[in-house]
Length: 215
Image (cartoon, rainbow, N blue to C red):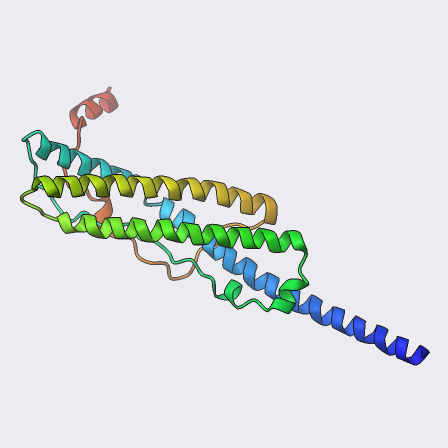
């Protein structure tokens, strides 16, 4: 009987060591994946000023057509670049290994991946809106239907921009505070569209701005 108990105890020790090793390996991999996913937020944020300026230009362009003072776009509208959320590590997690993780840690990782999925919906819809906006490149005529469609796309792009920006600030802060996780760059990120930051309409108030700076 004593021998059986010793054998069982030894097996439990071996199992505990194995599960600790499995949990440590999964933890390292999933934290790396989460950090890379968090990096999608600052990657996109670098384009925010160009996004806002471009949407303002498109609104002025549309307003010009509505007021009977149409202007011509000087170049392509451009499309914001984005990085895809990674889920391969999380999706392939082993149930046994996951069951041996602390409950609070599991719940926090699950929450972050739920938010990544929500962010992906915003990202894809934003990209869809900008692809549709690109259909107006070098347009020489805007019908009433075109104007209605353009206004809807501008509004939609602004909404997605606001949601993505808000998510970035909240989730980066939460991940840092609760899990000591921080955004990580990737060695080969998508190339930014150079057209997005090029003006396609004359600047408003440029004379006044020049005077203020000179003074």
